Image (cartoon, rainbow, N blue to C red; front, side, top):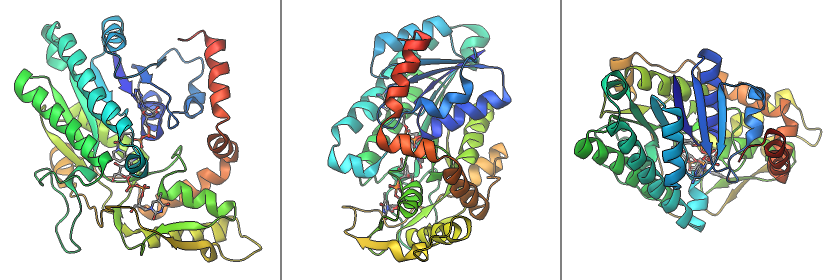
Length: 356
Ligand code: NAD
Ligand code: DAU
């Protein structure tokens, strides 16, 4: 058996591929365009493992997706590939429309053609799992209940609007064509291989470099943090047991204001790598806010627990400690990601392995 994963060289996708192959012998075909966010270093431990087939390509390339589906006949598509950073979407929304909307459309059409030609158990068992975000629901008032799966869609950034559009396409392909889809809407992830443009890894690497820790606005915006390993287990659970056509909210029951996150990181670094110049919190700097900044996200994850028995294993306290430790132990990874040197490694790796 085989699954096709898109975006499996990114933060969550690479954690998912590693996690999947640690628990299963089912081959993963990993289609990734290796944008700035894709990094084959994350998958280095799979070098020479025949269960991982990496394909350098774009999800908007219909002919390529058709070829992969025909050649590998996956039982499922697990779709992570996306432009994922809100700040980048504000500076340049075009890539978000192309990958998140057109890319998802391309995959849906290719999957529909592939699934339509299947029969028997293969047809009944096929799944298209779309990995989405809580940001599609917009911003919550301080005392409002957490997002459930029936909360209205109110996306506020070009990123969240593009993800909302992709969710709607997935829904429509099920209702109109019967494509057996599943959608997950997850809160903020953190953990190993997190690209240091996002809050948590950025704060860790900036602190270690003695650089300012840029907190947007008053820093009282709230996010609901989930350790990436828990997101991976939720996706595996939904793929295995989710009801076709349903959406499942995934979250960590960990609402925290940004400024508290930054102070927690500073305190952990003070303990694990004390700076002779003084406590890391001295580097905290409030900067101009993000335009249209959503004030609060919170996920009500009771449906996935009630129906599928999933709950996060990690608390924020254990997960953030593991994450800070991981960054301290992976200085080379961080340096290469920041310098872009990993691209040279990728080129060499392609040449060595004769891949497209
Ligand atoms: P990421 O930016 O780290 O990785 C995205 C991956 O997709 C990269 O490997 C990139 O090379 C690849 N990619 C981008 N455009 C592509 C294209 N056109 N064709 C093929 N590959 C392409 O993202 P992430 O944080 O790992 O997020 C993965 C998914 O999970 C996204 O769909 C995102 O919306 C969703 N999500 C993320 C979070 C989070 O906190 N990071 C939370 C909830 C949902
Ligand atoms: O909620 C899920 C979403 O979480 C995912 O869909 C997105 O792909 C992912 O990037 C993330 O979006 P956010 O915008 O919440 O994540 P980010 O790490 O960019 O920011 C987290 C919070 O921290 C947010 O309120 C903005 C703030 N922030 C961020 C950065 C990068 C700062 O205060 N300073 C910063 O330098």
